[in-house]
Length: 100
Image (cartoon, rainbow, N blue to C red):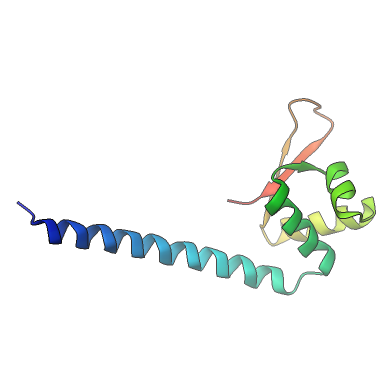
């Protein structure tokens, strides 16, 4: 049977491994964002705060042109920072969110 201290030690180890993985994921995303244009960084930050958005919503929120938002999304998709899916409300529209 494990003593109470051994049990806590395992939990702390598990949390530290998980925390390290999270830090690596965050730093990896930051590295991939570094060489992107400011518009892509703005779109990424908007998705971070607003959650899932359509292109039209991103245009409204960022006050960038449609063309600039399209370009930013394509660059973010190249770096695998953004995912898209079809909207269930309107199949003509795509919803964009941060990649998991």
